[in-house]
Amino acid sequence: MRFRISAMLITPLLAGLAVSPMVMAQDDGYGEAEPLEQAQDAENFEQQELERFADAYVEVGEIHADYSQRLEQAEDPDQAQEVQQEANDRMIEAIQEQGLEVQDYSEIAAALERDPEMRDEVVTLIEERE
Image (cartoon, rainbow, N blue to C red; front, side):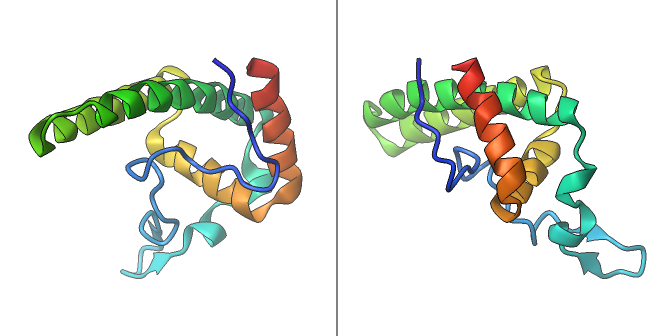
């Protein structure tokens, strides 16, 4: 399955995985959280992490497409919630199978929004996998 990736915007596919950088802040030891933007600079990501992110992104995209169809076919809110939970679980599993944690995936996605050069590099990696 092919996905169109925009070089202008690349973000995690579901809100459950798209945790805000401020929500995922890291404690500085003094009881105050440090924004993610300051906690992880783009240049701190190794090439292998970006490769794993690209692999996970493609898998998450395929899961998202599959479960979006299932969600549209849900007959009631309870069934829709079950489908959403199952999709979220599968996406987390796909990310972890690539050697990343959801927080790592979200940190890389947030960095891509701030760093156009890294975003272009990751878009190329993703396109190579499609």
